[in-house]
Length: 626
Image: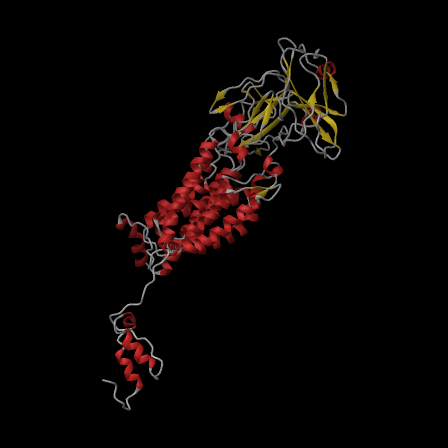
């Protein structure tokens, strides 16, 4: 039976199409016959029980969707262990009016500041009343009596460092000087010294170039814990400097003649000489913990910790180096204000990007105090915490030279890797994996490009490492509090103590006075032709193309004794010059030869050749620079 003619609306015929899915059903033919008649275009409709077709996804699409993170995000929270203790400051805050809370915080901060100023003045700026003479404030690695920056700094025959006797200095040393060392390879006689206390000799006499404060600890004149004052007196030449291991300082032995030495005046007493850095740091740690426990505003908490940490580093725990300035205390304040403004600006960025998201509405006040504040002081006191590891700088040469350096860097890298994995999981749970992946990809790609820039070395200072860590800590988790406090402290220590050193440094800047792998002169004197009267040398057999060496510099026992174009020296004249009452072979003599150019460039010195005392023979130097 056909379809009767009628005036019905053509759209009514669409009612026979029950659903879009019926296209694949046995009724499809009926639908097609209706659609084939002259009628408006029929559109598919969906019933309430039908679902859209979901095409299967590829494996790559599933991985991409998984890495995007859970939907909805699953943000973590800081552990609320012992809720009554954690929530007590919040209850106290709600019970007080805002004006009372603000007043209490202002009074607390002012009191904290006054205590800090009082202790800092007594530690660093108080006069020393009992010596009745000017007292020079030294650093652990300084010696103003003898120029120690290079072998020829004292000039030919050390004339710029005279007189060698009856020269005195009253000094004041900070604490923690037992480990004062040279951080580049330095030769003492025939031995290469690095990462050891640079103290040569013992209480009977120290070689004139020894660091005074480290020697004072060895002699018991000052304290490793509290520093102290003393008086040093030059005592003329010595021909033997035996080592000792007293008061935690292992000194270096030197078995030959040196034109100057010094001893400490044991009869000098002094007052107001203690370095109170440990007392100041301890007080600040305690007061910061109380402050952090009761303050729950992220901005107030952050700036209180940031500013007090800055000044603690400047005036107590790790002051900026001020060697050679007439007023080191005032110079430290000047350097601090030079660095304060840029450091505060970066601090504001840290607050907005990382600290505020982590600290906002955190109710676990005790957890915040223990983890964030505790880790902050670990990072801010980097010179006492991380310096206990056998690491100097993240530079391959330093890692190889320091015993245990490879194991230490492996431990540090493993710790960073595990921490990064844990924070990556937190980032994923918060559905922010791709934004962080994009940001850190840009950062690390930039670092890779920097690493291949010719003639420059990529140097990740610890203030830069702190800044790299901080964005990944912007989450309210227990571990984020720990990582963030540590990163802020590391940034603050690096920026305050050393300033903003470049991330790309030249080999000269990294060298710190050590060998630079230049051309080396060589001795023509050897074990077959040495007669005890002359020592001879010559230019390199294969000099570099751009070399323009015009003269020689000869060190005898680590003091420059000849500078000029000649290629030999009469030892008889040298012995007469020194006016020694000893036979020429009473002890060993150490010879090193270097070169200089008219433009003022100095080459490396050779390793030491030795004229042996017991038989007058010559021992040729080992290959390589010293």
